[in-house]
Image (cartoon, rainbow, N blue to C red; front, side):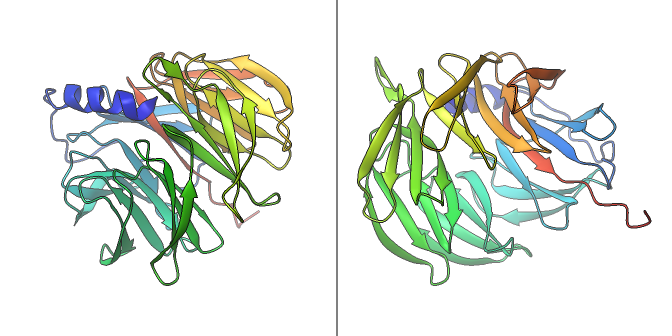
Length: 327
């Protein structure tokens, strides 16, 4: 799955020589955008969903592995495990506007508390580090070794490490560690189902024993409620109001499930896909080895469009367009 490929890819990109560009093609400010962080060649790809137009790639000079767009809808924050800062770019200006000194080790980031804070997963310090939107570090909470997956719900941050068999829980208001619970080994990818108070977690497997199951845990007591077959290596999830969509990268399969786990449909998609988002009423999948962005209708589970992006799309980052108030 993607963090297994991550170590190889980062080592590869470390040998690449990239030019440092002072400016890039601006990204239109009012459009809904789908972007990918591509780690095989250190580029960022953009697709304007309203204009149905692929925009020029940005060639960056650092091995970023992920990013997020801040609430101003213009600032694109990029980070990487081997990068000593989180770098901020203005989409509308097409240039870097600031850098935050984070040190190396950042492998994931999530906007929390209604977008007022950023939680960074730091694998060098085995902690979750909290920053405000001005780049000031406000708190740090120690976790299990090598935190990776982050999910937020009801003032709690759920933290999963691929190498540990324990779910970490942080109270976001007080930045205190709450009691966690044991989970299956080599866990990866997760989604919260608030209605049922469940946490669905996938996995990669260990050694020759690949994971074929989704594990569903009760958030009240941490007990395993049931398991759902979704071979092979269910590693990422997204959902809409009716269904949960699971991406199993070992079989290049997208599964459509009801909230009770009933399998509704499936689709072969991409080559080595492990990144999925629900955006603009569509399912968006990135194929790591096919270097494409695949747009899928969630009702019919049919592919509507394939777009070529940079090599090795590792994370999808989206932005909703601004409404035209003159209408």
